[in-house]
Image (tube, rainbow, N blue to C red; front, top):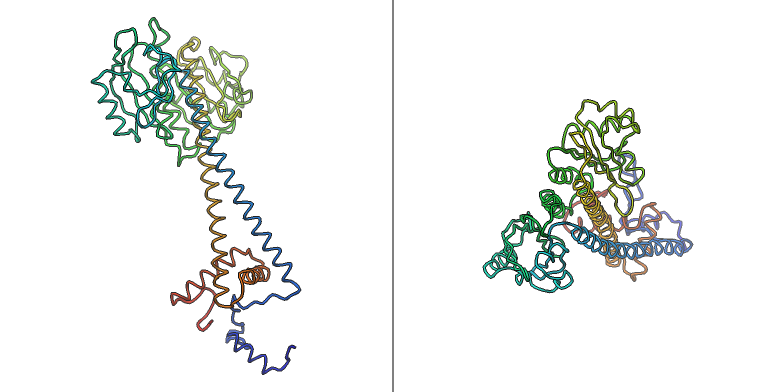
Length: 442
């Protein structure tokens, strides 16, 4: 039975720590955040609402865990794509684990050693080098080149052939792997004449791209480094441009020469050109002389006298979607040679793998942050329930119902209410004045 006696009301206010009278500035003091009692009429609805919120949190956790597992699998597939790309290289490439055991080798490496590529995995790399060079291999394994690739000279013992002394670039990869790329042999195959210098530059570029720091980078931040590496693989007769996003409205652009920058800028301005067509069609687009090509009259007119002639633009694909365009511009008349066309194809595919990897890293960081927030929210709610039980008594279910009532009364998320209660309790324990409360609030 409720009493209407003013004395009883004042007495109740005194027991609860509240004042029935306003302060000097005309405002009533704030209510104790723990002094809200849900009415029986709303308790069931509030409890169900808050329980639904917790169910949503649990669902979010399951989704986040599944997503992280998916990202881990995607990272593994990126590594497989990297190995597939190295298998296409015309120079020998061997991938080992951190102890020097061969994981994979491409056809050029198998030819150099006079063995079948399928028979190399599982064998120690030291078994393929001379006795004196095994010490060099062991030193590389003991001092893993995590910061940047290192160069060594090794003499490989080839079955049925004379030992071959070659220069090798060793770079670290994911999962503690090491990539050993031959960059100093005259040729990995007898009679091979298909652009030896270009093959070595391609190998060095692939090693450099595989060694880029992807963990804390974004795709846009990666573009200048990728363009510089790709540009270094080509002679001075060519310039390279890497565009992230559509060439008419790029997200990021990096070029290796002023002429390439001018050509990219004119394509943005005119809305036409090989890079634009390569992006929209997801197919390679080239021209033997850009200044005479009738397909892009406005671009051709603007580039006359700029020192740009042949061009080849290749789409950079990420998960079968066009993420950007890699374009090679020639400074001298005549078509781009087949060796450079092949190089550009390999490098465009490698660029796609790098962009995909950095994109997955970004998503992994975001998903991890969301998961951490969800776990923190659950922990804060549990801690707030303990504080309510300590001060009011009751069961965990009753404490949760009390938090739910506060959430409804203040029209705020339950986890925010819980965080406020935990912070206020911590302030009280430390002798500090709780937030939004004056002295004597207890």
